[in-house]
Amino acid sequence: MTLSPQPISINAISVPSSDADFGAVIENVDLENLTVVLKNQACSSPKAQYELTHRFDPSAIGYGHGKTLDAKRSILHPDLKTVPHQPEVQIIGNGLVPEYEGLSNIKLVHPHHKKFHKHPIPEEDDLTHTRFYRWHIDAALYNLNPPKVTSLLAVSVPKGRRQTLRYDDGTGDELDVPLGTTAFVSGYKMYDILSDADKEFVRTSRIEYAAHPYIWMSAAKSRSDGLGLFSDSLELSDSELPSIDHSKVQVLPMVWKNPVTGQFALQMHPSAVRKIHLASGEVIEDLKTVREIVHKLQRPGISPKLVYAHDWEEGDMVLFNNQGVLHSVVGAFREDEVRLFRQCNMAASEGPVGA
Image (cartoon, rainbow, N blue to C red):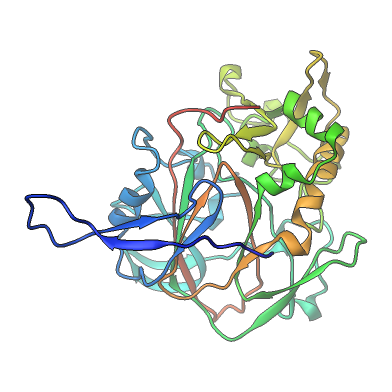
């Protein structure tokens, strides 16, 4: 993916009649559209990470998934550990960490595609090849609004290896990626490259997400490109889910409007979709059909030339517009390769605005 950087100026903060000699003004950083990398942030505390992330939505309260991580049947439960003294911040990674931020003997498990994909890469290729694990938006998609911004901080990063990422969807698409990269694609680009007819469709349609989606999908398996699930009738029935409050089921626009630029982003969590509500009032309820429509719309936007695969260095803090990009975990680690990251986001104080 080719980025077109704009000139950025950094100047010391100057306040009349003040002796304050700290802080900086950074101009021309496009936080609405881009993934922004802040280097050398290894000393940032979980509190500092929370406070920075919170500035993008000062009225937001609580972690973006609420308490749903406590549900052991959730597919997210094994992947995250909460920082005890800063519950909006989660610890993610791979390997055994003896002690970190008040937790002891943390066993971190990097999400591996073989646990989620229907057709995993052969075992003999596991350390040289990888997949997009699951393209997604950071969002509970039930009761809570999708966070506006997520921050990721690299504390410890394994070095040296690269992997070949395989789409394995019949296209032959591949991508050379650094070990343990996080992959990002732009929802704005995903919208812009649609046909005029598809743009009209997504501007006027809405997605209904499954109730308790990360429990609902827990037995289902993913496509090999990480962009949605196979329809094998493995989703849990309503009777198998926690109690459902239908007022908390989310029906969100397919297209989210940037409140600053007015641009449209195609923002859908492909694994959590349940129904499509059309402008006519008709509702597409057949799950296989819904998934095929969503995949057709989103697949062009994850082509190799449109993917930004961040090459993590220790101390990198990445801030990304969670209402304008999709992202995916990537990578297959050896057990002795320790990766330690912190993630922070908060359920937004308001829902996304459609076209």
